[in-house]
Amino acid sequence: MELNENIAAVVTGGASGLGEATVRALAATGARVSLFDWDAGRGAQVANEVGALYHQVDVGDPASVAEGFTAARSANGQERVLVCCAGIAPAERTVTRAGAHDPAVFERVVRVNLLGVFNCASQAAAGMAGLAPLSDDGDRGVIINTASIAAYEGQIGQTAYAASKAGVAGLTLPMARDLARHGIRVVAIAPGLFMTPMIEGMSQEIQDALVEKMEYPARPGRPREFAALALHVCANPMLNGEVIRLDGAYRMPPS
Image (cartoon, rainbow, N blue to C red; front, side, top):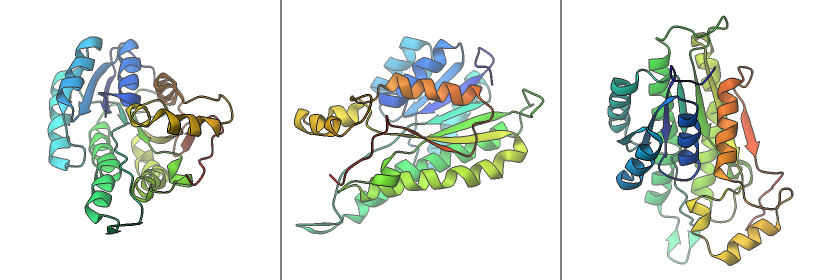
C-alpha cells in the first residue's frame, strides 16, 4: 500500500511514545491521520502539530471506539490503516505482602491492552471490508497491533502485562486468516526496550541495568524506529499474520 493523501489512518495511543511517533510518520507521508487517546491535552497538541485529528477514546469500551471511528471517518473517510499502540503496564506480583494480585488491576490491563486491540481491530476491519481494493491482489487495508517481547519473556511483576501482550501475539495469525478473503492484512510488532514514557518513568538505575543486558545496539529503541517498521509493514504486502520482534536481540531476564 502506498501511503499518500488518499489514505486515511487511525493510531490508538497516539498522544505519546510509539503511537505519537507513528502519528508523525504517517502524517509525513501525506496520509489523513486520526489519533485516539485518553489524554485530551497531549492528544490535541500532537494532532495540531502534524495536521492530524484528535478523538478522545477509551479503547477498552466498544461504544467509545465506535464513536471515535464515526468521527474519524466523517472527517477523513474510511481508514485503510490502523495502528494500535494504546497500552498500560502496571507492575504487580502474583502474590504480594497484601495477598493475591489485585484482580481489578489484572482485568484493567487486559481490557486496555488486549480487548482494546480487539475492539479497534474488529471495528476497523468491518469498515475496511467494504472498500474497493487498491491493487490486483485485492489489498483493502492493514492492521498493525503492538505486542511486546514480554509476551515471550515476561519479567517478575509482569503477569498481567505479559498475558495481555501474549494475547495480542496469539490473535495475529487467526485474525489474518479471518480477514484474508477481504484483502486485509494483520501484523503485530513486538518491541523490546524502547524509550517511551513507560521507560522514562523508571529510575536511572533501573534504566541502566536494563541497557546493560542489551546486545546491539546497546541502547533503548527510539520510537521513530518503531514507526519506520509500521510504515514498512504498510508498504510490504507479504508481511501478514506475523509477529515481528523489534528488540536488537534483547532477551529480558527475570528481573
